[in-house]
Image 1 (cartoon, rainbow, N blue to C red):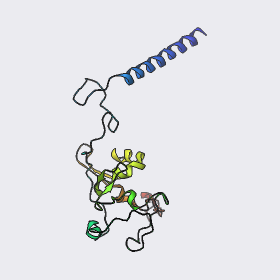
Image 2 (image 1 turned 30 degrees about the horizontal axis):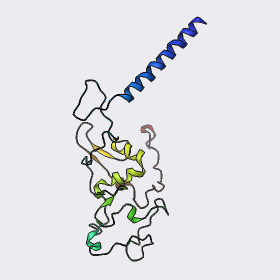
Image 3 (image 1 turned 135 degrees about the vertical axis):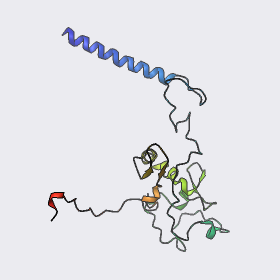
Image 4 (image 1 turned 60 degrees about the vertical axis):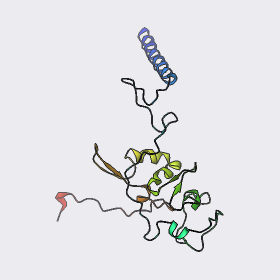
Length: 194
């Protein structure tokens, strides 16, 4: 009985020490970018103290545009933007928006006044090569996984230059769900070859 009580007290002391260390760390003054501390953890990127730099660029190929469709300004030049949600009947009729139906439409992602750009929720215009930032606004878990190479395809050396595929290299942005795939036959065992 005495042994169990002693083990319980040690466990409780360890938990209290961990909680106290966590509370002290959370209340520690934030370091500025030019301050460094030996053995200190690096600042978390993307948080309010250290936002991810806007200039950070992931090496990506050009998006897979339909031939003859980009730059969009070729056709949209001089057109007065119509911001009314509607079914398109003259152009882009081949695009079926099957992405949060009834909640999304073209100008939620495409910029109203610069058709060669997309725009984020905060209104910032971005290039099509940065579309991962747009997708990441709603699909944050996938964006996080994409940045570290868990989701999507990334090529290159583990300690050298890499190239990331954009979301649109695998997903149709207007209808992103993967279609059912026919499974491949199982591999043939070396002894089963006839």
